[in-house]
Length: 375
Image (cartoon, rainbow, N blue to C red):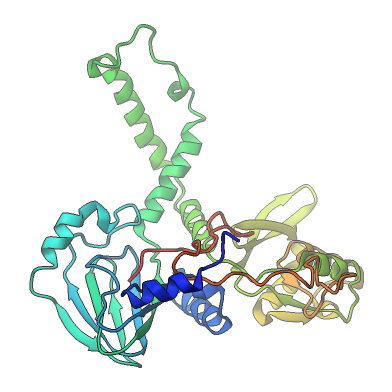
């Protein structure tokens, strides 16, 4: 199978001094899943966890910088770290170190700002942009890197510009064709049109609602967090069989928030922001949704402020929209599999050198989790 690691190749490469990189452990190992999610919730910025296993007396990577903040947690062995000042402060994802390879190499020859050996239990913080490299000492070294993908002002700038693109498309003057017979090789032939466009964009930028920009930043950031997987067949079956005694549990790692929504002809509304999605409900569900978001779990019969029929209606929608789950449900197949997965299905392949990078897709985001460069 193409996605399987060749164990003999890993052994050969490791013996030759290569570092084994285990990417995306925040999506694979439950303790790190919970740790990374709790950290992201506290910081307000997406996180990731990779592991690096380096053979004795070998260097993991040449001097480089990351475009996200990094916490290095030394797990086993010892590693000598050399840190240098940035060649660019606070680099963005579009400004990788490879674009400044010569400057990075030159800076790495200067006096380091940190020259230290990390031992098991030690931690090192590397703000984005700081150059770093490390060499394992007398035994195999293993460390985790906790990447923190900072939400930046540039993210707000991008969201504002995206919004201007949407708004300005309604401007008929900006949709006009340029003159026939123009010569695009001569900047003067379109100078007046460009001035008109720039002036119009200035005007449209002044109309941008900061709250709408902030909401776009929230949506893009929340879309980077991959929520707990759902078992579609099992949850569909559970949704059809809901009763007042059924327990609902919010889907883990799904970022949710409740806010007012514009009223419709049917009455007042509330909006549930769930990941990058926006779901609207009657205002009568506010207390029930508020309570569920606060506690994380509730019986259908305990959804506040609703009669029995409306409780079931709300619960069924929350389950079918994958906002809440009915715990401990599964559909048993004829072959012994669960939820459509045959009992004989192969185990997923291991990660590491030679394996493809973790899938960045996700059911609640265009980019389910942020993946950066190695440390």
